[in-house]
Image (cartoon, rainbow, N blue to C red; front, side, top):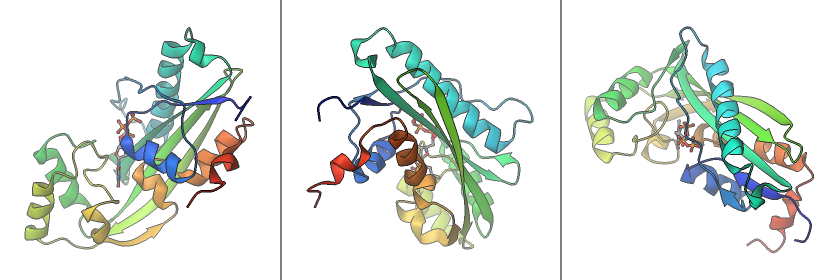
Length: 207
Ligand SMILES: Cc1cn([C@H]2C[C@H](O)[C@@H](COP(=O)(O)OP(=O)(O)OP(=O)(O)O)O2)c(=O)[nH]c1=O
């Protein structure tokens, strides 16, 4: 469409890209941000998710600012944090981390926060925080072992992916499902639409 702003997704997450595409929005460019995601001492999960979304947005903007792709573009970044109370669960990279997460989540409620940060054509930023409450059934040892063997937890906040096998662990969910997968679509599409980007354009003739 002529004249529409370009959309840059500051993410290397295939889930975030797939969610945007599901909503009929095709980013023009992917610029994954590389930042330190370590929480600062006593940082709350909400503050962490928002801070990391802002950090990802500013790091990606800094890298792309001198490219011609940045002219008239808008950029979106996100960060997802899973927590039990104030305890922040890691993005599981080892089976031991994933095992600790899954054992903790078994039979309990937890919260998932995604921070969103949008940088518009004038380099103004807008941020949102979205919360979802998820309850897991109590998991047996065999289920936990089989889940760990599946490897689906790798690179996922809280050591699980609701869009896979772990969807069968969820007894209840209050709030946005897409938030748990990594990009709350209502809020992300709203932020993008607020820049003048024609979000409904991609809906025409979608099957
Ligand atoms: C809880 C949960 C998380 N996740 C994923 C979403 C995110 O990709 C990841 C959380 O890590 P993030 O640091 O939010 O994102 P990322 O490093 O994967 O990608 P990028 O920073 O480049 O955008 O966990 C799921 O896919 N399903 C789930 O159910």
